[in-house]
Image (tube, rainbow, N blue to C red):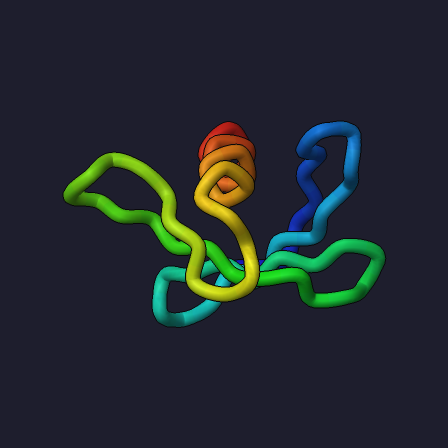
Amino acid sequence: MEPFEITVDDVVLTIEPQKDQSYKVFEAGIPIGRVTPDLDAGAWKPVELLTDEHAQKIGQAIDKH
């Protein structure tokens, strides 16, 4: 899958899908973290650097993409 852009809280983020089902998150070309879906919980969780709240918002935007 190719990288794509989403907007969360008026910030444009680039999402780069990874082979392990996680997504690297970049802001202005700078990596700010990684999120992964938690299928059992039906939610998103942060893997690196992000808070739970940010992971949920980013994951919801990925779902809508």
